[in-house]
Image (cartoon, rainbow, N blue to C red; front, side):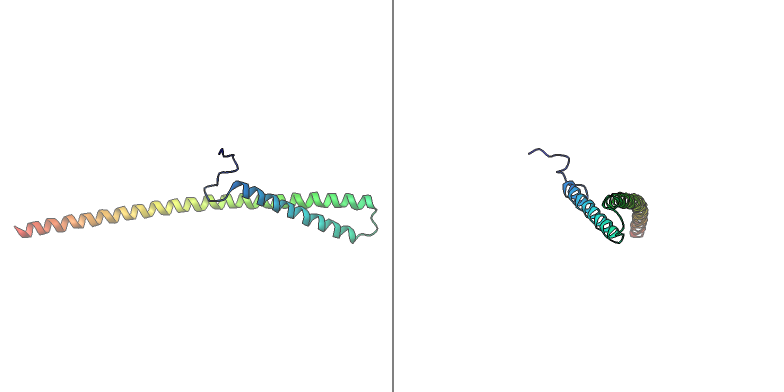
Length: 124
């Protein structure tokens, strides 16, 4: 069976097709919310003609979706920056830990060699 670009799971275990479906549903939810908000706004302005109410609704929905898109993009960018910062910090901590373990192993080997030498000299 041939895999498409959407069928292989990501490294983090998420499936791209599921991510796309979730994104679509989230976008649909935001659009539906914007549409309801536009209807509520127009209902509070009974003097608008039908054409004016429709134009106001279209404008409100476009603006609301643009704002939502910008907020989501900002969130994604911030998450990416945080991920890079955490990965960098994690790599630094791993390197520090490795150096400390190596130093500890060297000290342990040096002590063992010194004790071994001392035992050999005392045994003569």
